Length: 431
Image 1 (spheres, rainbow, N blue to C red):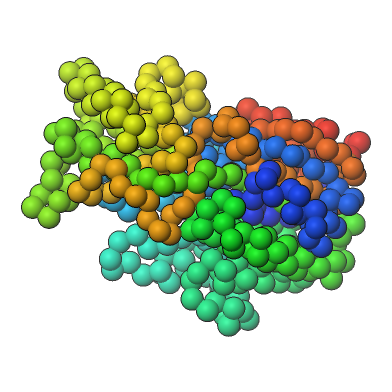
Image 2 (image 1 turned 120 degrees about the vertical axis):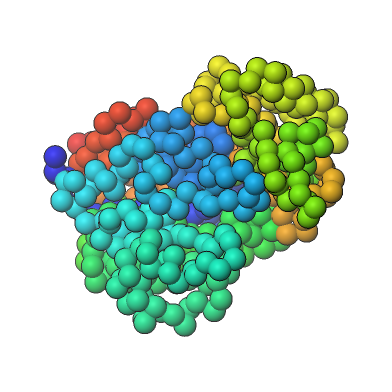
């Protein structure tokens, strides 16, 4: 296998960019550059649950969660209200786009890309956080990424990191991306920018800061496009920019594990922490996955099912659907989960053990995702331009599982076993 196109591919994920932003993007200079000579997909449909790590795994593998194994942002760790996320490549069960590229002898880089830690790419700036007391962020970053590259970026651009808020992280990531394009010229560059997602969670889907952040993301996109020009690689470079999910505004947090504790399925210690459990909910904001400790215990399954139906019948708790068995498999989640819950608009699920089952959403948590991808107006979008892209093409809708095969085609590669397909509608003839 070899990448036969002699192309460079730059993929930029703007976390939280949605179809609803399209009119605003048309008025921004960097996006105008791409839209003027490129292709557009108006509605990029996600997979379930519509969480960042799930969606990015599907984007690079072309398969749904049951196949790639990333079922939520976080791992199932009962008793932990802040479980570890799927930081590392080993969690993805099938080949990714960068695996195929590396096998073809291409150079690859990932900057803050979900689940790219310890992925053996040449340049990795990992997305990783601390989730428990005593953990060292510096050690986690160095051990998950490319230490010498990270040190070099810190030497050059550390003044951009005025704290770890998403605004400054995105400025640092953008500078690292531009540096790589100018000096290292990877064949495949994956960039994940976070600021828009952070503001929308904090202020609401169309909160007062959204317009400002869209302009900032356009500025960062312009820096990356300009770096490609400076490197002289533009004639062979394709740029693909996409969003992973939209949002629903929320007003109520539903603490599912509190409900399970009240029903006797979780035992608490004197401090209100989990001491033992027979059912536990791993939450994904707009949805939740509930696991039974003893899956063979039919009596437990019936009792938990009745508990969930009682919760669903009470409108204060905002449960729209409870799925089990074959219905979960049809959602693309496989057979490891016992119950899946979908929240109604305005509600989201929290893993916390709190005094009340439902309570007002925190002041800094005004919009969420993680809901079913088929909700009305709940899509993201994709813009692409450059080598191999059909100029002026407009695709009304594609699945995020189509993205990986389409990106692979731009590099002259394939993703064997992908459930999605390369979308020829946005590829140049022979591209």
